[in-house]
Length: 218
Figure 1 (tube, rainbow, N blue to C red):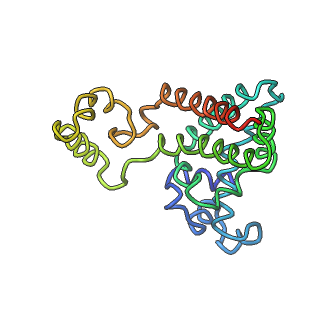
Figure 2: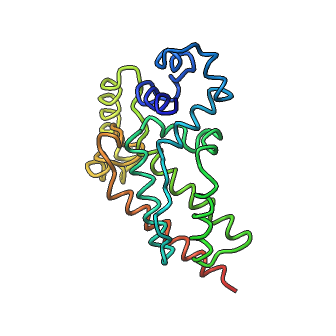
């Protein structure tokens, strides 16, 4: 059932997902699904969990930074296979159900090894989740459903017409930014991945956490 739910989300997106359509795909009445799940939210959460799979490594890393780096990369790889789930990740609390307690434990373990505890551990954990989810959600944001090519063309034109007197840095750097900068770009990371920016972001999160740990050390 969850495999079919994920396939439906891949086709129609989370917004277009319905219990009725899933039942039709499975050849059953919608009421039959409620014998197995409480409702649409549970199906979405289950499909997202299926898409993400087991993000924990087979062996616990000895170095916390290497563990964070590997976790970020595994998460991004999993979501890139099913980019239609990206809009729900972090943006809706239903996605909390898709993150198993074992993954939370793994992240906390990495941060404890980094030297965080108490309130600082909570702050570091929130930073880690936001870092892991946030970049990928932005990177894989879809184009509008209505006339995506027309929207992309209009957006590129709008960016090219930026007033250089009011926005001199943006105008000067436009050739570089247009190829893959959030807000400026007119394509999704599904088609044009932001690999180098992702690695830059990952290292920024790791180094930022390390710096905060040193700052808060007694």
